[in-house]
Length: 173
Image 1 (cartoon, rainbow, N blue to C red):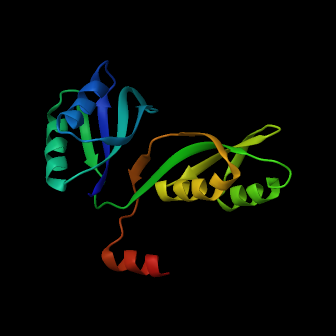
Image 2: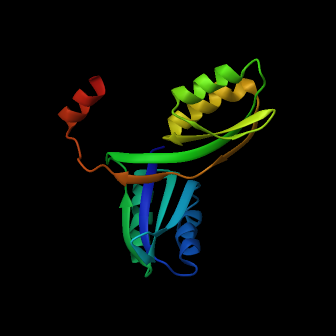
């Protein structure tokens, strides 16, 4: 099923999130991740970014229903749009003297940051897209993962949208 990242600008009011989420629940859609933040430039507005998967036709109906909600200002479905998308994850990994150097090299390769050091564990912060975070977890799993916490996705359209030829050249280059 197609994956949809949807950005919803809403009035910062009590109960708005419940109404937005209710539209997805009412249609039987699972929300894979969800973030809500007050807009830094206008505290009367919040941005909800959620990721879901489902048929394009039904998500188009949900988007239309979202636009009809009074506290909703703007809905953007990033399906088919070049975006910058990031998540943040902290992973507490078991470590000892034998594997500390190997773990440090993995963290460096993923441009991660050690944010806490204990006698038997390191806590690492990693940011990136979903695939990068999954790859990091797969590499450190053999060390022993003690705990993982993760934000939802945040996304915005790229400043410059590439046409098909530019996109192909960038992917091949």
